[in-house]
Length: 384
Ligand code: ADP
Ligand code: MG
Image 1: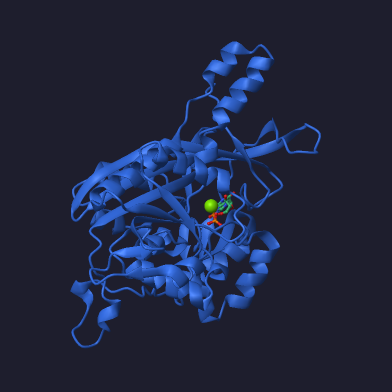
Image 2: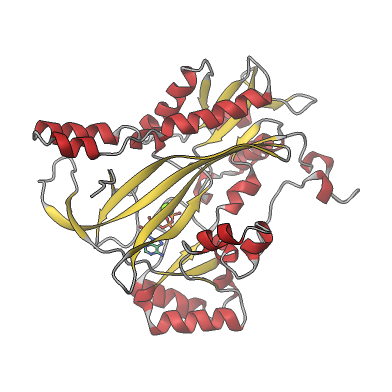
């Protein structure tokens, strides 16, 4: 599969072939607010091993709410006089770390009056998660405005130096909390995205970083030799990263893809079929996966999917609290997300650190789906 990027860096632009408006201009500061998600696979000897589910490079959410959940569980345990247990709940404050990344990018952009532009959805259900980060920024005297793609297309503009302006105010950082699903891109929204992309503002993420978060790239990174190429002379780092990879298989036309399909059809419960989508609810499992693979087997469309080994964590009993539902213990599994922030200026890595975690827990009968899909609930790790 070819991932097409609508923006071309100057070094890649062949004179006369690329319209000058498409040439990547002057963005020199890059900001990543990522969340890498893992499950604990039960290994043959019974010990749990961390396996990566995916990495999110756009709109990685729940850093705000995950900053609040330790206090909720500590409170519940304190009400039950379980003071010792309450003290064991880990502290967690990803909203502060994410905000510090945005603040660093804002500072390096270097314009004291510039704002942060948060691209929000029309009907935003996760606003409180986002506000936690906005409030951390405001506490550092950095102001955030919330606008939709439509607003950008109507009121956004670039000056001759490709500085981005919204409603007449300069924008230092664009933080996308929209724009990760095809349905979020009308023609007008594509135009707005292109305008933002062409600006010198720091995009979180820029289009290349968004594409780096696709399942296809995750699968290609797992090929032997690729990490070695990206981390030359660091065999230990390569080994530690690779140890977290599950089996990932290309479905490109050819022998390798044919073999992967055969294996998945022979043992459907061991695999997940993934399209290039974000936001939950798009993966195919079991009988649905079998039907899709049979339909796609001789079709080039199959290359737009990848196959992944299914991770099987050991289930445990827990209560998933929901308004209106009685509390009862059900069998659950959890997914651990680790928030990572990096800021790069030119070739210099200015910041690269882990800033907190997210634990989501769901009942075992749900193969797919996260918190937004109404399947998983926010949780806290509890060190035994
Ligand atoms: P999305 O980008 O839609 O969030 P994910 O790859 O995170 O896609 O998959 C969505 C959910 O499906 C995950 O949160 C996890 O619960 C489940 N899932 C995904 N991949 C696997 C896998 N390999 N094994 C087990 N469960 C998986
Ligand atoms: Mg996910």
